[in-house]
Amino acid sequence: MRLTVLTAALLATAGIAHADAPQVPSNAPYIVLSENLDEPNGYGFCLDTFGAGKSDLMHTHTCKPAAEGKPRGYEGHDTRFEYDSSSLQIMSYPFEGFCMQVLVARGKTEFALLECSDHPRQKFIYDEADQTLRLDEDRQSCLAVSTETIPAGPWVKRVLTLQNCDDVDPSLKRWSIVTE
Image (tube, rainbow, N blue to C red):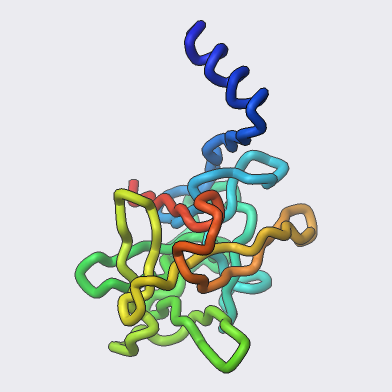
């Protein structure tokens, strides 16, 4: 314990920030940014569909409290996603048959929830060593979040981005995939 307190004091003095891991209140499965950053409840930022329920667009959002006893298709489960390592897809838990896909246009990248397919921009490699989700067709590109936290009603959100892995602060690109 003493070593931990001393180490934390030295790191703080050196100007090195340490973010706590989020305390996610959701039931698994979910995919959450590994560091809480500035999510005010300590719940972390989970992958999410835009707005309430099913939407074509995605971002990250405060991980939502568990909705006990609700069926898989319940729209309140919209921050629940699972990673399928055999298909390399990030799949919606409540909206079966829908997967995350990167939409790329000159100067613009969006993330969408579309019907699962063999489209190469629905394929992501999860690297357990560095906790990154990399686009399979371009493994230098990582799923990350923006640096800005935006109010979202009683919660907060961050924009999803696709960036060169070497250019992104580790706290903005490390993900935890929780299955149980």
